[in-house]
Image (cartoon, rainbow, N blue to C red; front, side, top):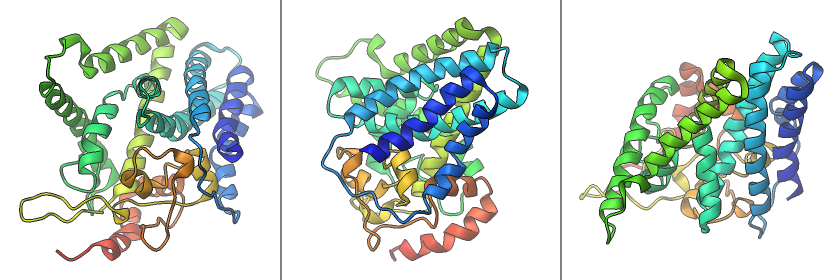
Length: 337
């Protein structure tokens, strides 16, 4: 577990120092989650599957997330010793941390069998104003991934920016309707206040109020910017990991079972460790309850991205380049109807 801890916690430590001291630490923090990761991925190492839950690291990262979010909002909003360049670098580093590491950790936690970790995972998403992702992910994405019924599964030829505009609306409503259907099937009608969307909206409002308490209107501006940045990272991850791949439908319109060929994977070792094996996506969809250290990649049965997930997310920001790189790869995995 040491590489998972080192890769995921090091940027947090450096970002905390940057928030408190500024200067060269702001640049070092950003480099630790960008350039350093890129070159570490070049080393010929493999993360073997481990028979461990990784729960201790996940809970530690959750605590770090909330502390770093509060510290970051305060520093960006009020710290008098930070220059404009310091603030830009810290904002970039925090956005990448919340988007790539906190999102991956929240994703791990909401799949836990125990209630407490699931609620902590939901709180992480709520703190980035993306609480509805919990409902959409568990009740829609994992049922309809790689079909048009899942708003988060990108279609072949769909550029990221068009995808993002579609998903920002579609994910919210899909999760809402899925929760309503789930509640309607309960033996006893649950009280209205227990609807998950009440927690998502009220929790988000509390977070905005907390940002104001920490740093006034500048704190709210910093917080909203960081939340949007984190959401963008999550959408990029979903876009990359399911782009163009589709399950076959039978005559009744029912999709084939999810298989290894329905998600893109990036087995680069260091970025995978940093993101708690989120890039090992096929295995996760086939076995959602499997803990992140045990996730595996088989190169001959799973679609493999040409670069790491963070690098491919950057490529996705330029749709013409993305389609030139990925469309021909998608067609290799398309089975004839």
